[in-house]
Amino acid sequence: MRPSITTTVPDGAPSVSIKADAMTFSAKFVEVANVENAEWCQIIEKDDDDCWIGFKFIEGEKPRDSLRFAANGSDSKSRIIRTGAFINGGPLLGQAAHRERREITFELIFDTRNKLWFARLRPTFERLALYENSSSIPAEAKGIYRYLDVNGELLYIGSGEIRDCLAARGRDEWGIHKIEYSNIADDETLLTWTHYYATEYRSKHGEMPAIKRIKGHQLP
Image (cartoon, rainbow, N blue to C red; front, side):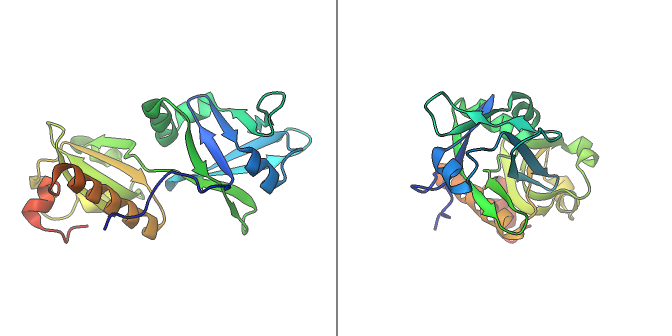
């Protein structure tokens, strides 16, 4: 069964729309979050999770590293922040925004423990390293990954500690040319996305990636 994953926002849910130069917060979000009077927005990232992005909203004096949280047009109840440099500097956001060439909308969820709003983005294997330079992958990197050969053919999709998996016995004989990956800290999330992308590949090609066909289905 294909996993139920979508970037479609449920009807009436607070949301943020992201494009190459801005983020727009829906009128529903402004109402639910009670941020009509907020003037600044701080964007928060996690080093170990490319797919998580958080937001804090502030009234009054501008805090350090914040962006103007402004009305999106004179009659609009939505709000906008201009984020071109931030989006283009982020591997996942920049790749997604420029690839899609349109706004991409994500549901916003409130984190009651840390008192902030956050969105979960779709991982796109936005980080990469050549096999010969795999030592450039941070030792703590964990998430979903895929291997490609020198012709760009997908060999394998997996999840776990990126460098540990790459060092597993026999993988130096797979013909790996490039490793593409996304950092995802949460185990359930990374397994869900691994299943999603493997199933998507099989749906498109009628078979699993090459190494899966040769070695079976019990690889990390």
